[in-house]
Image (cartoon, protein in one colour):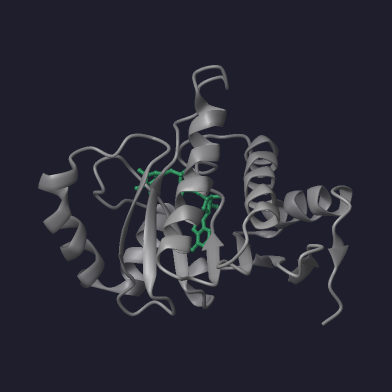
Length: 190
Ligand code: APR
């Protein structure tokens, strides 16, 4: 399943159901943890598909960067993934939405987009950060992700041309599809 939505300035938001490790993009965002230690979920999938090189890079930078707070991210190469970079973003653990979770989640998307911009990336893919083990309600998280990405794509002059939301499973895909449908963005026919 896949849909593409076009912004007025020609940039695009793509919505895909599937495994983020199989979809080509200049940069792939990961839902990592503060220790950059790897884990299950999308983090596990990215390390498995990308190979040991990614963890080696994280091992090297860990003493230098220490614990990465929620809302921040670090960049590595992408190993065997169909990408140049992986941005390891640390999402917030959801408690009740009143402990800075929305701000931290929004920051994950903004920081990754800035990193993409600095590296000359034209396409960036995102999983639904924090909505697995970290317990963020899917729709609340999707609203934040869409607001941040759309705001970025609408306000910036150059660089990132397409953001790909890769949703794992039909239920997650449908949430994005509904919110994008309500947003007034036009579905692209190309
Ligand atoms: N492609 C795309 N999305 C995926 C994939 C995949 N291959 N695998 C899982 N997902 C989806 C999940 O369905 C969920 O919606 O990614 C979303 C985020 O879930 P998690 O991977 O559990 O991430 P998060 O909730 O941010 O928790 C982060 O989990 O694996 C650990 O090291 C990670 O400790 C960190 C924590």
